[in-house]
Amino acid sequence: GENVEQHPSTLSVQEGDSAVIKCTYSDSASNYFPWYKQELGKRPQLIIDIRSNVGEKKDQRIAVTLNKTAKHFSLHITETQPEDSAVYFCAASRQGFQKLVFGTGTRLLVSP
Amino acid sequence: NAGVTQTPKFRVLKTGQSMTLLCAQDMNHEYMYWYRQDPGMGLRLIHYSVGEGTTAKGEVPDGYNVSRLKKQNFLLGLESAAPSQTSVYFCASNDEGTGVREQYFGPGTRLTVT
Image (tube, rainbow over all chains, first blue to last red):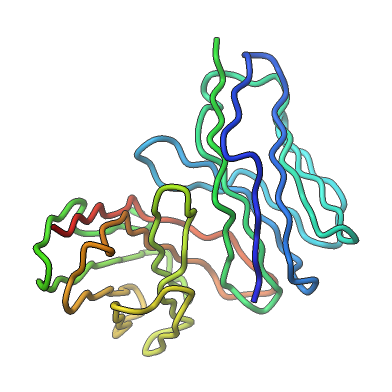
C-alpha cells in the first residue's frame, strides 16, 4: 500500500522567511496530493492540493510542487506570518480511491 | 449548514468499557471516514464507508467497529476499550465524483482510556 513520509517534523522560522515542507510517496499510481493545516486544538483543513497532471500550483503565499519521477511533492510558504504557525500534513491518494494516506505532520513555528 | 459534527467532544473510559462515537454530516456526502490522531503518527484511517449500508477497514481497524445505517451518520464503536485507544478521533466526509475530493473534518473527540 501507499506510504507517505514527511520532513521535517518541526520547522522554526522568523516572520517573513520562507518555509518548505517535503513529502515522498511510494505508490506510483497516486495522483492526488492535498495539504492540510491543523491549528492547535482544531480540525485539519485543506489549504491546497495538486493533481498529477500539474507540476506546480499557487494560491497567494502558498504553493505546491510535484515531481512525479522522484515521487515527491513540497509545500512552500512565502512571507510567513505568526498565524501560519500550525501542524501541516501532506497526503496522497489514487484516483478512484477516496482514501487518503497522510504523512506524520510538520509543526511550523513562525516567530515574530 | 453545520458541516461535519461529532459527539461527544471529550470522554474518559475505564479499560473494558464500551462506547459509541457519533459522526453526522449535512452535506449529503457519500463517503465518510474515521481517523485517529496520535502524537508523531499523523492521521491514520480506522474504517471508512463509500455509501449508506457499506463499511470497510482502513489501516488500523482492530478493536473498532462501525456502522452506516443512514447516509448522514457514521458510528464508531469501541466494544472493550484499551489504554492504547487513547487518542483524538476525527470523522471526515467527502463527495463522490470524478477524482478525489476534499475531505471535510469534524471537530474531533478526545478519548482517554484509563
